Length: 183
Image (tube, rainbow, N blue to C red; front, side, top):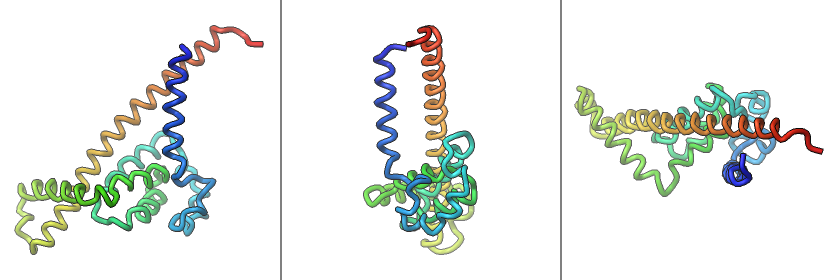
């Protein structure tokens, strides 16, 4: 593999690590007030820190669905509980909660309401209950659909990145084998 490709890969890796640095890890659990309460369980659960297989995929879907749910302010607590109960990666589940932040929460909830109302319009459920109940129902249904769609997109991106990482490791190993012993 060329030196240029390796430097580009290392820059991408450094960028990702810098983005993940402030997020919860096994070594810095006591820094987070909400997670600190669950520290004993979090340290004993290896899937919370695993970036392999099902823990990541579950984290992508759970995190996206929770991010769009109309539970702003409780999202991190719900993400920690969901990660513990559903055996998903805690770092990703919590990180995805920041999709909705003070700048994006209003447009996100407006979009989930529109999606939910469009789906409810095709059913008889729009006439049941008052306006507030209908829009609450629409928010939850829209959040579920939008969260699953967002999770599916991130799942595809995760598969692509893991494929690229496997290719890079294979090329690096091939180059190491062909270069002969160093010394």
